[in-house]
Image (cartoon, rainbow, N blue to C red; front, side, top):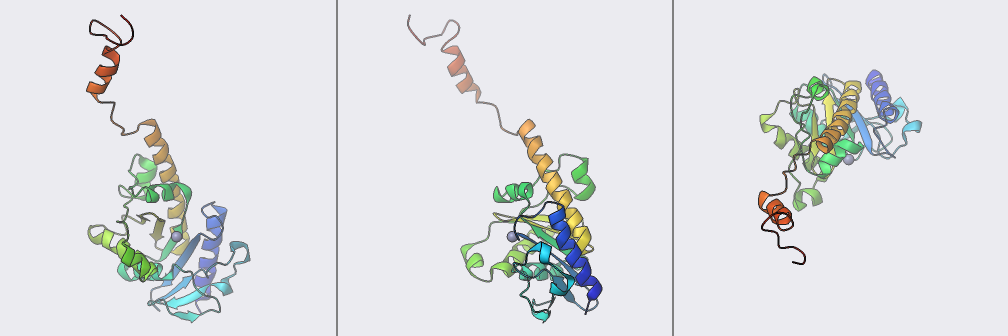
Length: 229
Ligand SMILES: [Zn+2]
């Protein structure tokens, strides 16, 4: 069933590797058939070079396996939670791509500094709140979806198709699986350039005036007292 969707989701997962967005197996892409309310997702822990369309697992909107011999991605409950909450999206990509993950680990949104970012995302890339111990020790993957949905209470998922889960990494979506990979590529690019922009023009305030005065004036001018008379 859903052969076309499984083929697209397989190709989209392989594209993650081609784009350099994944290391080992830290990444997954899914796609949804909205008419049948079924999700096609990467199986858990399978290396990308061995991935074939027949390996793609089909799950229902509760994450139960409907077709497939392999276990679905461990992040399946997060994907399903997002499909349920954001009715216009058709594909989701999760990666631990380096620069986007750096912002996620710092629990900081990615500021919008330029047009590359603005072409893809309508302002800052939001970051979720940190998950509680109860949320992590409980139904972790479903709760990850819940904190994302909570962050979108006042945000439009179509205008903000990428989010950073605090201490974790990005989840990115689009109208289909392959486009969600493209948005993940764009996200990594804007995260990288934002980090470089911050390194060129850091929002770091200057040294306090009183500390500057203290150090300069104790060595220079009429009030100097440093060293020997
Ligand atoms: Zn992850």
